[in-house]
Every structure is written in structure tokens, then in C-alpha cells.
Length: 247
Ligand code: NAD
Image (cartoon, rainbow, N blue to C red; front, side, top):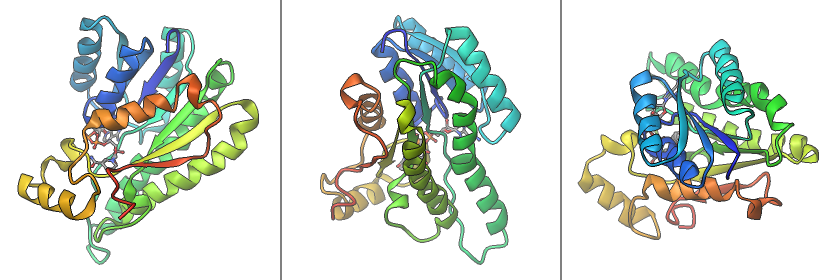
């Protein structure tokens, strides 16, 4: 990863934070982006304290103008941009007949689907100059099989898997790989509100490994998709789910 620059969205928490740290440990320059200055600064400081290279940017991925500005700033600061990890996400739980459905749909799609092509479009001029251009999109097992009350979330994540395949085909000739990870149940802020008792029951019933995953277990898969060893892998949709989809 030395001399490569990675931009991670939603990097102040959970899998984004773990991804930022894992890439920094491998020698990459890391652009830590998320909603708040406090959150991004904390992760960038943590990485710098460990001897890594990181800088914080405040970025709401539903803000089109901010995306263009931050992507250009990151490339100018580190002298290029090689890897995008589209990770930012929110929990959306709403019944189809709820009055709040329209708003929940609009927000879920904006943050977890529309943002991805916007970031990729802004980054494309830099990826085209990179010696190792990679895009990793974080979807969810909700894109592959569904649970009730999450339809805007599932639709956004399903869109991400289709976007991944389509852009892999479109950008493959230029040597840009585009892959997607579908995490299963992972211990992060998003799943904090679920009780330990329910987590244990769910994991035993639904996953082969009978447990929740840790953010680092997804982050290492993201890193591996960006290593030279993965140079022939593109358009893949990979569950990292403890065997949830295998059951
Ligand atoms: P998390 O809440 O710990 O981290 C998500 C981060 O995204 C937060 O730091 C949040 O501030 C940021 N974010 C939210 N809205 C944003 C916006 N508009 N602009 C920029 N950043 C924004 O959750 P996590 O579990 O680490 O989630 C990471 C990704 O993994 C998400 O896309 C989520 O949907 C997906 N995912 C999570 C699980 C799980 O079990 N935790 C399972 C499948 C998929």
C-alpha cells in the first residue's frame, strides 16, 4: 500500500474506522472522511499516533458539492487518489405504510446509493492516473436476502451490488477494479442498539459461525481486494457474514 492513497467514507466509526486503520497499517495514506470534524480528527490522530499517514475531512456524502471539493482536496494533499471505499451508511427501519416512509427512502437512497457514483465520478480522473486503481463498495447481506421493515435500506444496498457489477464491466478496460462486500451482522454503532441477548440468539440461529463479526474482519477483506494479489478480481459481490447467506 506504500505511496497509495485511500479515501474512506463513514470512517469515524465501525467498519470505516477499522478500514482506515488497516490501510494505514499497510502504509497507505488515508483520507478519513465522515460527518463530523470531531469524529474524523479522532481517527486521523489515532492513526498518526501509531506512525501512520492520515488526514481528516468533514464530508456528508449526500452533499454533491462537498464530494467534489473533498475528493479534489484529498488528491491535492496526498498527490493522487488510488482507492475509494464507499462505506458510509445509516440504519433505516420503517414499515412500508408509515407516513415517514418517503423521507426514510429519500435519505437511505441518498446516503447509501446516490453518493457512490458521485464519489466515483469525482475520483475518476485520479483513479485513471493511478498504478493500482480500486473501488470497494460496502453493501450488506440485506442486498442478497431481506428482513422486514428495511426496504429502503435493502433497495439501496441491492442497488450497490448492481452498480458494482455494471461499473466493473465499464471500467475494467481501464484496469480499474470494482468490487462489493456484503457484511453480515457486525458489532458496530449500527448494531449497538440490539441487546446482547438478541445478538447471541440471532447469530446462533442464522450464522454458520454462531457469532457476530468484528469490524476488522470486514476491513481486512476490503484491504485484500486492494492488494496486488487481487488484480484479476472485479465485479465480485462477496458476503463477509459468518456464513449467514450459506444457511
Ligand atoms: P457505523 O454507524 O459504526 O458507521 C457508519 C458511519 O457512517 C458513521 O461514522 C456515520 O457518521 C457515517 N455516516 C452516516 N451518514 C453519513 C453521511 N451522510 N455522510 C458521511 N458519513 C455518514 O456503522 P457500520 O456498521 O460500521 O456501517 C458501515 C457500513 O456497513 C454501512 O454502509 C452499513 O450499512 C454497512 N453494514 C453494516 C452492518 C452491521 O451489522 N454493522 C451489516 C451490513 C452492512
